[in-house]
Amino acid sequence: MEKKIDKILDKEALKAIFQKVGVSKGMTLIAHTAMSKFNYIVGGAQTYNDALIETLGYSGTLVMPMQCAENSEPSYFENPPVAFDLLEDYRKAMPPFNKHLSETFMMGKAVENLRRREKAVISDHPNCAFVAVGKYARMILERQSLDFPLGNDSPLKKLYDLKAYCLLAGVDFDNMTALHLSEYLSNTKPIIMNGASIMVGGEKEFKKYLEYEIDSSDGFMEIGKILENKGYVNSLTIDNVTLKLVRVDLAVDEGIKYYRKRDL
Image 1: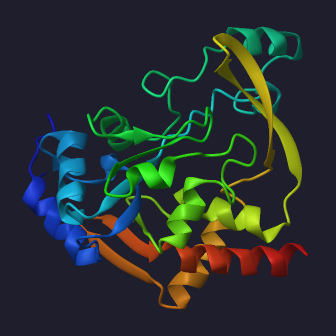
Image 2: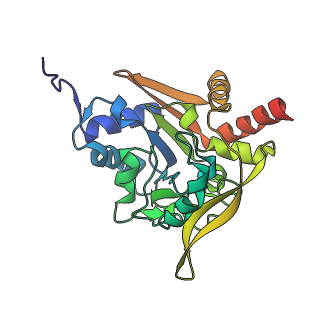
């Protein structure tokens, strides 16, 4: 029997959900979303993002990670790995980072919709870019460092300083990009050499850069449990989709303590 659409969400219904979990006007928000977990959204990602932006209002800012994971050092690839004799061919073949054309990796439809918006601002990092719209979009995303792109000279640190919030909608803490800042600031992770294809002086170049070896499967869910136990997380479940809202600085600080206690 053919499955029917028996429940729908429109923009006003989504706004009510966002408000109920704690998203409010003037908030700076980094959002992670699995739209497939929601009931059918009329208008898809366009409606979803419109609802978020309108909930945040004129003085709010919406940020999403726009990670282009394939534009990176191929010798680190695992699923699947790149054959050793093809590594240099891969580096040469990779097109240079383009804010509007480069492929994102498993970031979802909401991110792709946000990057297409006329007033969207996109940071310059070829592997760890972010996209934002709203009052502080340009300030948050300007001058992202090539080396250590998720550390002190990153949009994540600016979100931390602004006491921004993180919304997890249909995903859990293992998707919380801001917790990578905890890995950086804990000084417990090894430094590695990564690389990406970029334009340098009008020529394509596979540029090497430094970063910490990071992994969202390494402790993020445990940090999330700590945050929930301390009462830092607003949580709401509607029609089998769970939304969680937490302040970025509180989450990062708990993450730093977690890694230092565990790894030092």
